[in-house]
Length: 469
Image (tube, rainbow, N blue to C red; front, side, top):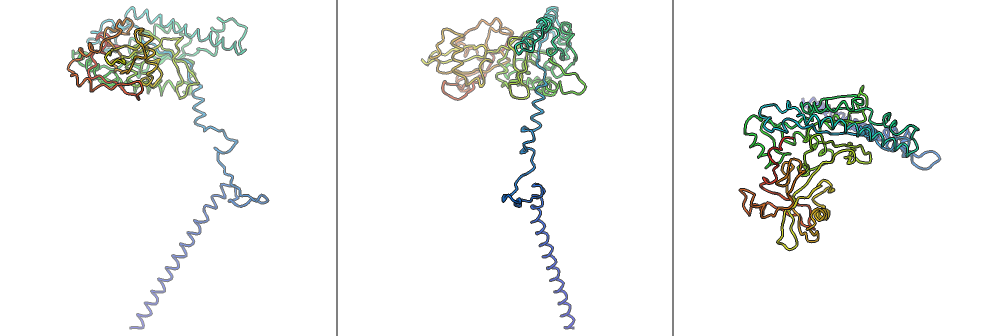
């Protein structure tokens, strides 16, 4: 019995030893194969040399096949090259036109009885639309003349007359894409404009994303309360209970610009266009500029609404970086107007007044840091101011794009020049002196950027009858 047990134990021990040896052998072979693998890969990458010394050279071959290091490949990545070509193919001109005067502009109670999208143009609005069409055609004609003159300066002009060159200018505004909001007043405006440049139009689209802001149900008198709330919160931020906020409109306008405008000449089967004419609303026009030029909400609130049938002309400038290389053409079209209220304190520590600074957009960003330029503009606009005496400037907030009382719809007949701060404080309701002082942060001459804040901006509200854009 003992003999048998000894034999079984021996067999078991022998099997265990054999198993251990097999495991060690397998592990050794695996490690050896892993050790040789990098050499094989390096050999493939170096054309079979495997890092060995090249015969007769005495140096190791470290060359690698890499498209970014190969001199025969283009230096810039393919996607950047395609982005540059896409920029080159963009339309050379984009014209934004606000609709003519509507019945809602003339009668602000109409929206309680008629849907906003069905409001039509007045007779005055139709006349404005015809003039706008004539003006757009004139802009295209002048661009043809200018292009012809540039060709002549480069020695590429022909013997034909200037007028003939403008008419037959093949590289000019031959192909126009007409885009309009689906609202009745914009469709009527586009229809009245089109005959003046119909020979250039190759495509026409109705684009819902550039419609007017949805204000919601306007039938009740609660809308007046909503408007007052909007003035306190700001047009960009306030969302109507059954409608949109300004930021909602911004989102869909930016979506339209990115998806449609930037790809208008990238669609298979469609003829490329030289220009786009967009007939839309004043708020939409401001949001197009906001997303294009990177305005902050504060800067957006400083910009006045365009007049009926005003035209902003965007010209392609390939020297500008980014995917949307457009600038406002001041010679060809209208320029957006803007202004800001400034609380100015002087070095005597006593005199403190409220001034309206015009042409706020002409100050380069960051605007609230350009204090020397602000002082110079104040001195230029108000002769009684000596810029050396200014000790601090406070940039007051905007509400609904207006800056001071007595200002009309577009600020054309604003008569106010200065308003003593004491008088302004008296007009601020339900605000204590401590609350008013604690809510203000001053931007001093040698300080970093600080923003002013006003807790009750009722003073900055536009007249109620001018709310509809």
